Length: 381
Ligand code: BMA
Image (cartoon, rainbow, N blue to C red):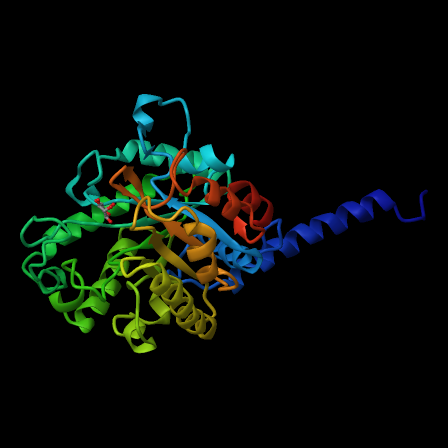
């Protein structure tokens, strides 16, 4: 008869115990404690919480570089022309993809196959799947049409009271959010799990250029719209979103707060800043705005980002990246910055091969704290 304990048996038992313990503590293999992560959607999936955790982790290492529609098209090319190639203007210059990929889902509400910039939703889904597998962060804005007039986002006819609960266009809005929800829930990874996304609806609300902003609604209606939209998404079984709030350039903390729906309803704080008023003002604004947002974000324990930016003065400054943008974002603590789209030579916001600032962009990309996809892949859990 054997009297000494069987070492193999004990090790096996200990292993099982550890697994059970991990399960109880709801920790992933990488040690992420999902119970401790709270996001706006209390039923958010673990993948969504992991995204939140990773965004916070990235922000401690540097600033992830993002680009809108990076792989859908660039200057002089469209993905559709070479559907087998995952291409990007940024990758052609630096050798790596952006770490953050922005998409706009305007016109998903109409049930159309393409967004307002003619990007097909199928293509978007396909690229999101490929990029997510590589570790990319996906963020989405929504330039939806005006639900009262069926005009565009820029049709300023007041529309928010009509789509709030009890409003005469409510039914239409419920349908629109349902279509939006179906799209979010159709974004699946290789294992069939829904891909988490940073959703940034109703952006730049402190300006008056969209029907959901400035003079076209009251701050109370804005907050209500935010909450009701979140509620409708949840009712449609969407639990894969982190919600980002981003006004346009602000001149004070009060301006940031004016439309803010509350910490309970927001996961990521942001701001959109372009250099309409020249490069000097831009660097100053980026610095001061990110300081304001950082303060708010730290108090709320949330990450923050420069959710949209870009060079409006196309083709003027060869050193824009290292001398104008970088001094503004350096040491800001922002998790990412997102450059707006490279649509055509008269409407682009980043750079492309042969463009006047491409060489400077290469230098900017090599800075230790500016992170591209491969670097982010090494950071995230
Ligand atoms: C704007 C412009 C428009 C575009 C919209 C949504 O800033 O780039 O051309 O339709 O974003 O992507």
